[in-house]
Image (cartoon, protein in one colour):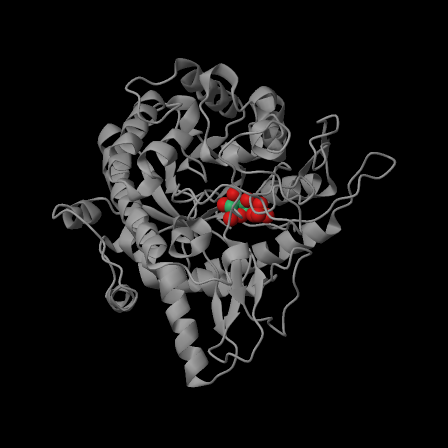
Amino acid sequence: MNADFLWGGAIAANQVEGAWKDDGKGESISDHITAGTKTSPRRFTKEVREGEHYPSHHAIDFYHHYKEDIALFGQMGFQVLRLSIAWTRIFPMGDEEKPNQKGLDFYHAVFAECKKWNIRPLVTLSHYEMPYHLCQAYGGWQNRKVIDFFLRYCRTVFTEYQDEVDLWLTFNEMNTLVSRFGTLLGAGILPEDGADMFGLGRMQTPETKEEMQARFQALHHQFVASAKAVALAHEINPKNRVGCMLSAAGVYPYTCSPDDMLEAQWQMKKSNWFCGDVCIRGAYPYYMERFFEENAIAIVSKTEDADILKKGCVDFFSFSYYTSRCVTRNAEVQKTAGNMMLGVQNPYLKASEWGWIIDPKGLRYLLNAIYDRYQIPVMLVENGLGAVDQLTEDGCIHDDYRIAYLKAHIEQMKEAMKDGVDLIGYTPWGCIDLVSASTGEMKKRYGFIYVDLDNEGKGSGKRIKKDSFYWYQKCIASHGEEL
Ligand code: BGP
């Protein structure tokens, strides 16, 4: 692997920071999601009740531990840290004119700490959170006005941090809006009080036309916002490089029947390529027209939007990779849900404890498919194994299963690079244990660093190096040679 390849890790504000009301921070949509478990889903509640919303409220308290945590990342040899800015620390309500100085100060302090360790920040502008007020008063992203509020926030942070940050991502996993899972956290469209956050419980009932329309309208506004943010970032600092961020998974046909082939092709387009095509090629792709027509979706846009999309193409493609999917048009084959997506069990692959299919070779397949399509630099900004860790009596965590998972994926990254893919960096997800987005648990751990907290937030909060910490340290020091 070449020496300028960026090694690091990834976290997100609402899953690590805690301090949900400190120093003027406003309520974000993620503050209204209850804790869940493997079997009971996280729910949206209008009223915030202390105790029920443990995860996003206190998380691992990175807000007060960032120095210690970044020092640990530094010791591992990170060259890059993917993190997000909480929009609500900067604009607590979202629609005010002036930013919150204390929020701005916090990220200056975080970036200064990164600098001490020679870690380059890669900042996600919106990672599954937005000001709750914007959801309540404006209907979230389905309202075009939110574009302007977002851009005011972008202008503020691009200007404020122009000497500290030059790598940015717009919306985390923007393509979750293509499915119902993205309605709440991605689009900020509020469901009824008490609703299952990802709509998993509602998967049985078909979505109403209005809901679907609202979701795709919200996505359109994010496309425009993202393109404008890219142009703005380049204008404020020509050194800025901005990427899109998608949740990507290879889609395999369950059988070689033409029907299954067509289904796999369509799912690749809809789930993986649609958002990438708009953000990278700067226009809606031909194949969505039929889908919109058949589902009576009529996107309301302004004439200037086409031009905005063309002028705001991203500089690189970034994505999360956890799994691949297997699909069929045969209604008799049983579908299961893994990683928030429906699919068919792939007989060649095993799943994690949470039912996410593990497929390292699928990463090589997907990297080739992405690069083949877009021919721009690619960065893998999330990947990892969510697992239960045991703290042994001597205070260690022997997570050989995590090492095996990451090793297998890095090996396939190397193969893809030999294939010619321009892969520029790798930031495994949850490099320090954090709160799970889908289940709200602490127990589903991804980190190289253990955080002594349980699902209820009880524990010392102490940070402990796992076996994978030392393994990743060696991996980085040897440029990926020693795995
Ligand atoms: C991605 C999200 C992250 C993260 C990850 C793991 O979809 O961008 O925020 O949480 O998935 O998912 P989970 O936390 O549900 O295991």
